[in-house]
Image 1 (cartoon, rainbow, N blue to C red):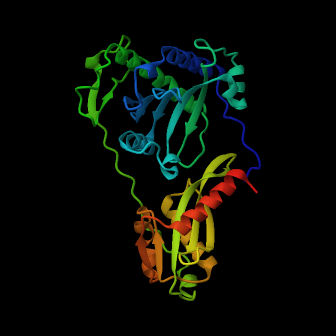
Image 2 (image 1 turned 180 degrees about the vertical axis):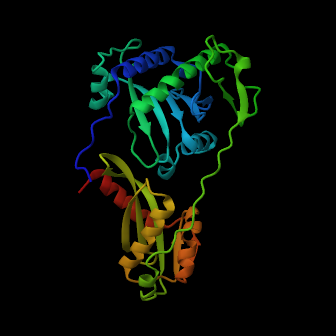
Image 3 (image 1 turned 120 degrees about the vertical axis):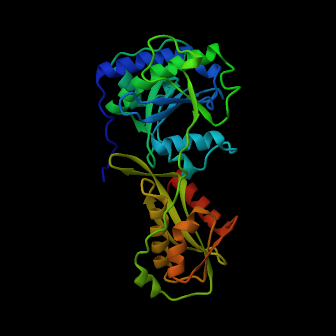
Length: 349
């Protein structure tokens, strides 16, 4: 495992100059003054025919920029976020984002690596003082947002002009979404027309993305587990992403999941296990339960969980071990242990 972060991926100077010109044009138009992040627009790659979804950020007055959500995971994330009644997704959902993002920051908030990238092409912002320094980020499921690479920069060179065209059209037609079916998304024509975009150019239709599914964990170390002594006690178990739970992996930061097993009566932590979020949840949760049960040196009569997804994941393993798997709305001892661990990771020893 590397002991320090890798340098940002190299991007050709001509590519970054072209991207900065587009980012400057987008930022100067301030489309967030008119558009909400729910005013999403569909993009079809002219070469690969991959579908991506663009969303303007900034109407809430906090994050100013644009996100381009890609692949099934990214599009699912965006559609779930726009249809959710919660203010923010939970951490497990948040770290599954798959998108490219351009965010405009004051210069003093721009990380050194990003500022150095802009200096290589002698970039100077225009527009509002203090707002206009673009940061380009790549978010992939399980990973902490990172620097974009050459291919991602080239993707933005394809998508950003089309999003700018759409923002111009929306400013001219602010009622664009009012008479449309809620589930429908306006898709832009491919290739991009060499003229101003027109309302009749838009192809409105729903985008159906399969829901996230979870597979049963393939039982491992069953013989070792079956040899453990049995107890009449009930245990509580969770596998979660905690704030501050990042690990350096392959030269860049990666989120991690923490599995904890606690005794329901006494509240004692019986075992813990750490895994990377780039692994599927079922792998993390399954291995976490196996390792924490081995650490506890006992098998409980009943295992309580507070995450409905784990019923499918852990059900076969618990059945094989003759452990009753139960779902609870709250698990106080487990929540307290997770909170304590999260605080420790945020502050450090």
